[in-house]
Length: 118
Image (cartoon, rainbow, N blue to C red; front, side, top):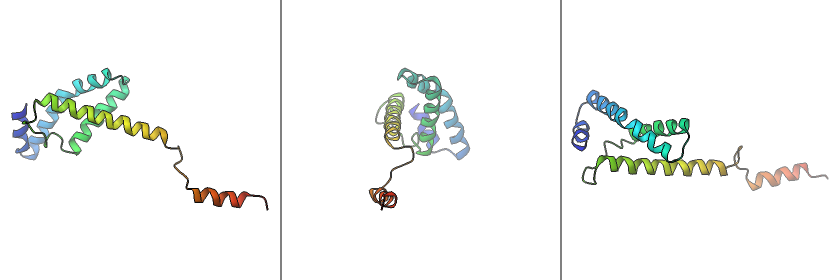
């Protein structure tokens, strides 16, 4: 797989796009199944798999991959685990944030002054 990935890094845009399409088709199901085994519901796992590959393409993850580090599947698994950890962290942060955003202390004190009986 590494040889193939290194070749597409040097290929023209059309070849690179076809190769990335093949890569995603080949690894989408294993990525999805790993996410399911991590305890995510079916639809959530599909969304996370799609988001993983979207982020990988945007950040050129496969173009920056280094074969000297080890096997491609290990690289993919490590990248996926990092992506899932970030997704969990982001979801947890959203749960802790108030629905309508934060209000500054200055706003609250000025509102209290306006509504206080005179």
